[in-house]
Amino acid sequence: LTSFTNCRQLEDVDLLRNLLNGILLASVGNRTTTLWRLRLSSNLIEGTIPFALANLTKLISLDLNSNKIKGLIPPNVGQLHSLQ
Image 1 (cartoon, rainbow, N blue to C red):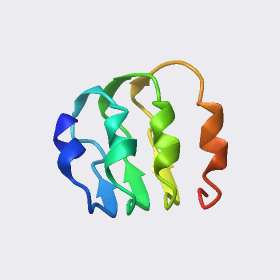
Image 2: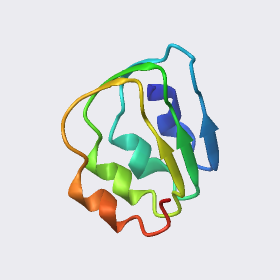
Image 3: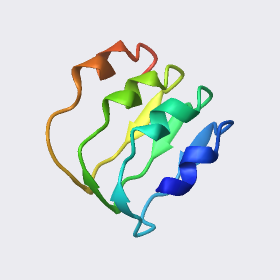
């Protein structure tokens, strides 16, 4: 998932069932301000949801189900007022 860190103009990422592995890096939330959908469900992503995800202020849709993510949803994700 490190490839996404240099993609600054992403708007829609839909990588459902691609056997992606690794951790969801904080830099995903620090690199783009245009992302409105992040769909990474049914992969092999591990770790926790980074606090920096709340920086994706235009995010409407977030789907991380069926991965190996552990821990709590960071409270600052509640600041994403457009999230449905």
